[in-house]
Length: 174
Image: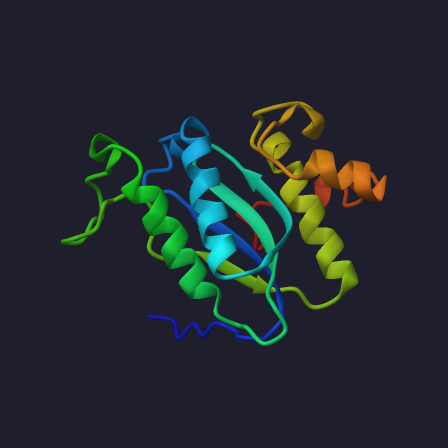
């Protein structure tokens, strides 16, 4: 088994990918209000800034900026996953790969990447906002309602700069 170690940098910017256990489900978009409430609940109790976010039916991508003295993103994800899971019916639980006591909603792990610099940040923001197009859910990021793309575009008046051709499925993103 690989010896994976997470990086913990107080005040860091982190890109995350978090998946449902059963990727055939659409729980996140079907329960978007529940997810928004869970997200808001955690955000108020363990401050962080959402730089970019996109919720798809079976996974989400986001970039969080942690407070200068804080590096504890795992507690935020644990609380968010638990709050969401406890707020939806048990009939949505997946039976596959579930351990005793688990609801069977989320994959146990998540992908995290410490943003290195402004170029890395731009690349990840573009990836997040283009993701609904990549997954063929819409033809244009403007058409996806569960994304920070609309506010990002309005605030920064900038298009997606990273060409979609550079997003090879074999690279680090899911």
